[in-house]
Image (tube, rainbow, N blue to C red):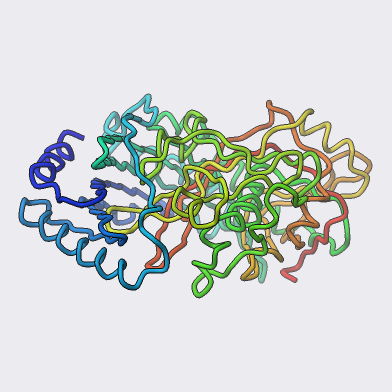
Length: 480
């Protein structure tokens, strides 16, 4: 942060005369280590540093990004941003006076108990080799891998209204995968934190039982080889939190992005079945469905104090008792649409403009244990860990495949089934929600590769959920 402050001082010494400006400085570092089949893969180190200048002037808005943080480099970026603001004043689709302004002053640092540097590379590779050894427990395991990925991103946002927001985000994500084969049948299983991303440091390895989880991962991959196919029928469906992450992400998170609702993503990733008139009255799901935008959860991937335009981040209900309340729209989209929103304007790096994104989108817990939910099912399927996903261009009809399935009969877990999948339509599916696990079943997870925007922006997104029970869902197997 000290380095970013130095660059900020350079800018402040020549701050432009305009209606409003922001300077957003971002420094990012990542490190990836992997051992596959006992062999150390080439490691990956990446580093990025730059700034984006945003200018509001005479009814127009413009921005320019630069990795040249010298006095002359920042001045050139300002000049380009002013030129774009002048063009927007003549040709733009909205008056730039609605652009959000911020005077917020705040700081945030992700909770890190054990630094990435606490272990040497030799120590980290030894852990990965131990996990590899534990994964290779049978000759039918034909591919196996263990990895560690660390990401750190420091942000400093300054505004002409006196705003100053400094935030540091850091995460360590481990993962394991085992691929089993017998004849024409190939199955894979993930674990060791592969679908359990959170903010934090090396303490995450113990939290997800990184090396200790390896035998389970391999054994379940092997079990899938001889398991029968998931039945194709209409049955109750019990989704564990690892799969709920993708279900929330694709059929609640993306449809509620306000810029998508306004048509901004139409030519790239589609629009949304949600319309502005639905907010405040549309029944999105059953009365058990409570979904929040919550940047206050300790350790969740997008916990923060403000978004990338300086809007203070606070918890808001998106859906309450099944009724749609507000979209995932930042301050600019809120002004364009005349709707309330969230602190949801985020950019993937210094060279991308902030757009409406998911943050921490969480399905709030209900009551009861996983065993209680299972006991309520006469004929159903439990599914865990996403394997494939498909959703239409209005984010409405969907189909998901999972890695792991278990039959449920007469309130008890039965045998394993392979290639489990299910399909549905968002509103019908969420209205079939008939059970939500209690607080003790809630798991804080997330994804690190959510893509959106032109040019594309990949960001991390947090999701928390308990296991959830849905009635009368179309399930299938056999890759159908």
